[in-house]
Length: 287
Image (cartoon, one colour):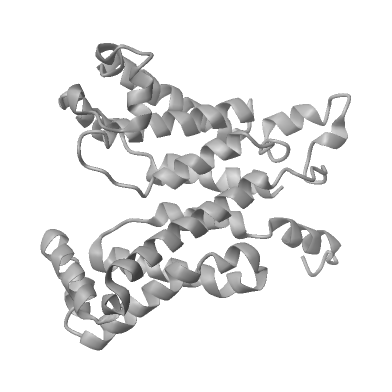
């Protein structure tokens, strides 16, 4: 059940919010393919001629197949195959877009999470596959009550990857700048630079308060360095996950940096099964 709920959150969220439109992805076709520097795309080019891969027809075809796979993954038809195609297709499209000298990373973990979901039984309930499976010779393998002892490995892996990503960011700040990173001036400079680029009003307000910048920098370090605690201690999640959401909302309103793909993956931390058990056990009036 947690896998199915995660599928029903992550796939539609990508389709409706995070997936880049074809017009933006097609911009990469205007670049010189000789500049491609991403290892994944270079690996593909060792099997596919560059003039074939770097063409409107192939890239448009990958985008259409990826889009169709996302729809199938949402409704849960051929769930494993459609999720794998959806994750791999987005990985190729994003990798190609950032293969020409400019590199961004908010989407990378999300694409990995989609691939991991495709390797797991995420269609065992709340899916067309489940509806068909319950009418088969082994109906006990389908539905929210199906027992799969190792099925949540994909969600645990996503949790660990998020913990590592946050820790990498926080520890890099401390290793490069030490506690000087939290002196307020560093964050003021970063926010001022992005305010000049994007003109976020909240950024202008923040840089005028030195002590708010000190507090913001300190909170950033604390959340990033200690986010991994949420992977191992469930009780800490009610504090750490809201702090993570607040961190990314603050980053967006002050610096226009959209890391909401990471907050969407917080669904991997929710104990959906415990909520379902409480709901089923509760009297009808309490529900």
